[in-house]
Image 1: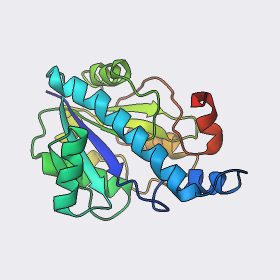
Image 2 (image 1 turned 135 degrees about the horizontal axis):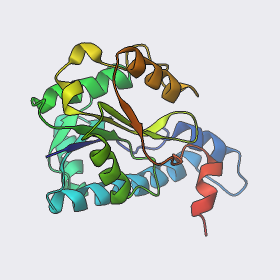
Image 3 (image 1 turned 180 degrees about the vertical axis):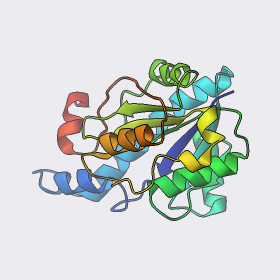
Length: 213
């Protein structure tokens, strides 16, 4: 059964959604940008958890919540509140290192694994199922984001059995060419890559406007 790992940061004022926080700071009528950004992040995280738990309840996938910003006990309590009872801590390092750690914690290499964040207002089970289907015939699946990165990355069973072909070494996280760099590394390692639907992460105030009103 495929596994989905939700990479989540504890939504605390002035510690999450920094780019959105910065944009909100310049808006008239916003008294506390940090608190506003925190509330938005909480709502996004709840939505993500709702989509994933519905798939887990139907036995489509198994789910893991990988948390940054909390200790073990608090992380477990937050996971229970979100309906995601399998909880791990992300640990240190860049995003590639943290994802690789979660793969190793999974202990099994005979099932595909998807990673998603909590920044996608229109996350839906159809897109996630499309990614799972794509992994049946590919080593890697990517969900492109409008900013040049990706909102989803999935690793097929064959790739998980060949860690020497890990395609995320030296990726410039946070830059506009993350997707292209990942595709290039995958091609260099002779990995087959599939792309699913392009979506827009909510990082800036402009990204929020389609969801207002």
